[in-house]
Image 1 (cartoon, one colour):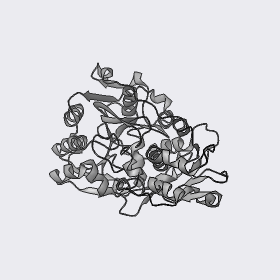
Image 2: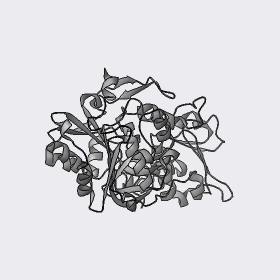
Image 3: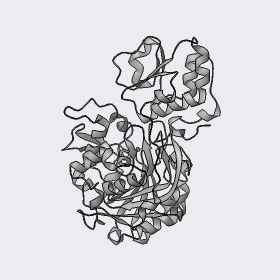
Image 4: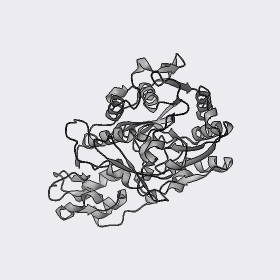
Length: 415
């Protein structure tokens, strides 16, 4: 029953063989979204329960490129309210972030209050187990039950690069429907026999087999390039992409970002299984001059060590939260790090669950490295806080007001 509801065909789908995608830009977040949504008939939503799933998984403000612009959420909500739907907004953020605090910081709380819409902490209730019959890396998901309580699911991601998955758009945004820390589990999977792709990419394509949005509204008002999803640079684009087929919407967003969606493993694998359309020749994009809105996004570095060559970074099966924390630490305190090591030495830092061994003297970051704590310096946390890393290394208190929240939750703050 639950699985069937997740895979219910979108009531807005026009032609599955040639899905339509609309691009609107140049008018600001609210007007772009409203214009793009006018390309759809939302009347089938009348009387239906609609769940809006923005990207508000971290604590960051509007314009940071980390979280969905609240005016995009407002325009989607207004369109569905006008269509006679019952609208709610929900999120399950990364570990260490409180949902309502993230909504407050993003400006989404105010949008909901003005419209008397419920804001749902999707982690508040016990998970529901959903099977993944075609799964290669995973066979089940721990799903936030609120997804099943609604008739229509709308993915409203930010247009971002991603250090692990290439991009994070409408399909990847559905990972935020997974309950609490089960999201992290997708980063910790063993290699899948017969596949060259990372297990994370395979797992996201598995997830898309049972969890796809009925409508996708991709916020490119201010996206993120480089080290997304939270430690990159804001990229103003002033566009919104709307599509019923989430794969097609992601493909168009990729083109706007200067990327071929076929080069994004989780999208390519999902399309190969028939979950959606990536081939631009089979996507009806409007208006005709939509590519005039394109502006290439800088890609994530292939290795953090390239940005910080004086530090040896051992990264195996880490999640983006720990990677963001390490990046913030090196940017914020990197010069101080070398005060505690001989001039000729190269500090070694490890993160992620996939290390069988680490060198003696390694700085082990996060709970996933706990089994190597005796090898050097261990900093607990999921993720640890940047100033705590320096505290552990130096033996002195290094806290400052920038650590009032989890560093991973505030990765936009790179002062």
